[in-house]
Image 1 (cartoon, rainbow over the protein chains, first blue to last red):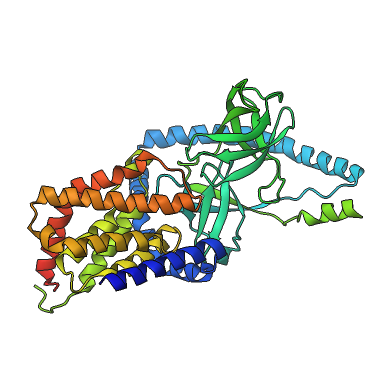
Image 2: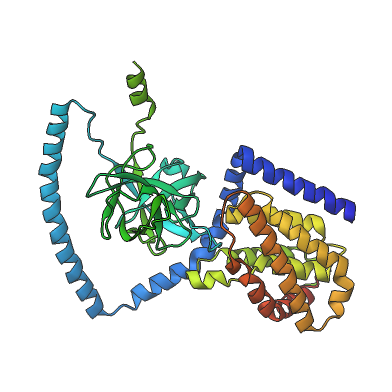
Amino acid sequence: MVTRFVLLIILSLAILYFDHSYRALSQVRQWLTVAATPVLFLADLPGRIWGTASQVVMSHNDLLQENARLKARNLILEQKVQKLASLTAQNIRLRELLNSSELVDEQVLVSEVVGVDPDPFRHRVIINKGAIDKVYEGQAILDAHGVMGQVIEVSPVSSRVLMLTDMAARIPVQNHRTKYRAIAAGTGRTDRLELLHIPVTEDFQEGDLLTSSGLGGTYPEGYPVGVVTQVIHNPGDAFSSIEVQPLAEVNRSRVVLLVFREVTGLIEPADEVRR
Amino acid sequence: MVQQANAHWVVWITLLVGAMFSIMPLPEWLSLVRPAWVPLVVIYWVLALPERFGLFFAFITGLLLDVFQGSLFGLNSLGMMMVAFIVLSLHRRLRLFPVWQQAFMVFLMIGFYQLLLLWVRSAAGDTIPSVWYLLPSISSALIWPWVMSGLRFLRRYFRVV
């Protein structure tokens, strides 16, 4: 028994090492995930039934109220869209004057969260769109309020999303007020991001809106990411500690948007500089 | 009543149900205390039928759990095998223990399992160590008596040998 045990331990460690260092097993994992999809859907069923049930038993009055509220909201949004059309036209004209690249109009695809990572220390979810719907690795995910995360694993009918608040997540952002660029890092808490390496002299205030800067090519530019909630200047530290509340409802949104965009590689501008 | 002996499919069904419980979406505070369902089921079957379900069984189950959870391949199989090894070495004594003492052993084993997972994960840069990580061992120990009697009922009803 002990020999067998030692052999299997070595085998496990070898698999771990190969999976971690070389990502050699991603193809195998993809196909196994497809096989596991029915179970994932089944596990999500109770939540789904609960949602449907609470919709079915919603009172007529509540529905009327909600309808009125949504109509009012729609009106406001439509008014904003009217303005947006003229602004977009203006923007394109100005860009043409500047001879810069065209404004890319991003396409979106609505998707639903069908599973969450059972490990409460990792903020990852599974969505019900995959390679069949042309989802790709590194694709940005939004919800109604802001940037939510990016796709890290694609299988044919589902994909795994890394949320902004995961320990491993980073997103390039820009202070909307001062245009200062920074990197926001996940902290493992659903209500907090952290800005990395901000000099104490830099102007950050509570309530500042951070938008995605679009640098790095993963996240599209200009979507809201979070609001600064706390700025601490510790005289002993070289950098100030800045806390950010993500705008996306990372642990609540069930419906998310996948953003498609042409990947504008970082290589081109660099080549231009070299020339 | 099912007449057929060796109804091993029951084992796989219970594991599947365990896996479903362990990936079911829960509110954050609840998922912190979510018992480690699959290791619990594995502990039961290895304890009940050690000559049928041993290390290799634990290894395969761990790999499947890795697929479900999207964790690193080999992570859960490593932990699961450690647990199975402990159960295999102690199963004669464990069976004679009263339930609360078994629950205490489950607490230790799941604690060790969680700790192992935490070690590998933080070595891979996946998470930060936190004491909360050990909470599932307590909830697993508390729920062990019910898991055990439920699975024992299934084992007798379907005559899994």
